Length: 116
Image (spheres, rainbow, N blue to C red):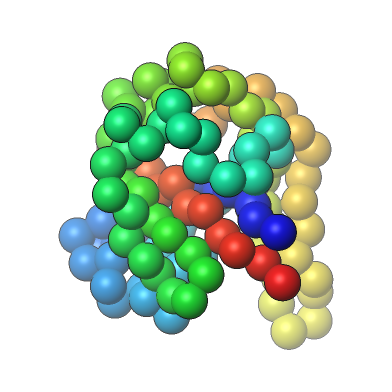
C-alpha cells in the first residue's frame, strides 16, 4: 500500500534532504495527502526528475512552485491537510479540497510513501 503527500519544505530540508533521511515528514513545514494518487503518476516523472530515498519506504522529489503547477495540469488530485500527531493525539487528515488551495511557496516536496 502506498500514499502520496505534497508539502512546503523547510529551507534546510531543500538544501540538505539527507539530514532528514530517517524522519522524512520533519522536512515539511506543512503537508497534505494527495487524495486521488497512491503512487507517483507516470506523467509526473519527466517533471520531477530523480527522487531521493528518505528511508526504507519513502521517496522525496523536490520541486519549485512552477513545477507543482505543471504537475497538476497533467494529473490532478485533491489535497487534504495532515495534522501530525503527538504522543497524546493521533494524526488527523482534514477535509479534501482543490489542489489550487495549496499555499504558495518557493519549494515543495512531493513524497511517495510505502506503508504497511
